[in-house]
Image (cartoon, rainbow, N blue to C red; front, side, top):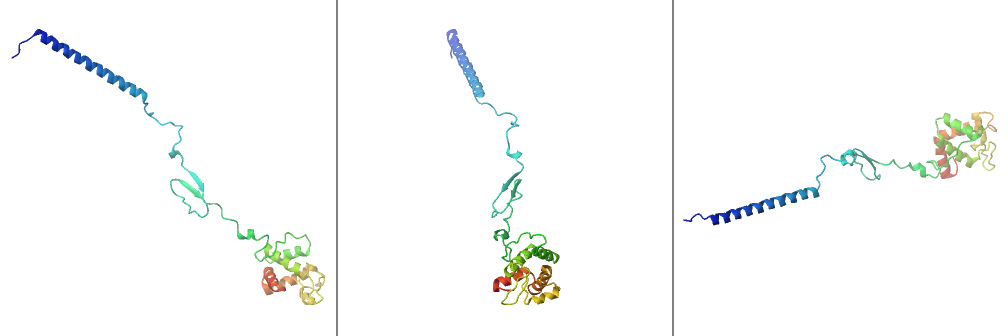
Length: 208
């Protein structure tokens, strides 16, 4: 059993006071450190910056792919557009029709070629057939109504053999280009179907 001692009690009280002081000092230091840390590291803003771009705002984009890539048209809001198809093969024919005849262009008004073009139009034939006809009769007579072949006896723009065959189209067959063209187109359509058919025959064999 210990006896109460005023001196010992005073020492103990002094020690307890010192411990409480140290604990208070430690608490103040920790609190100051937390405040400093909070000020050094800023918090993220509560609301997003309205001016910053977001992926969600891009609702539509367009891409152009090569023709050999399979398009994807309904994925994630993107639209894929293929380029237009290449030009048709006729663009690479070097100014010639499918039958190989060069383009004749627009004939002079009132000329034999203008008469022939109108007759072809009346028969439902287009410029491709006109191109073939121009090439064919350029080769035969150069569209000369009086052209004659002394060897064979062929005559006129279509080089009818003999020339008198064209009388079936009109009595003025010897000097009227319209009469000669009428007979020549009748002969061509009856035998070859159209001028390009006759041109192909002429190219293959030298005559039609």
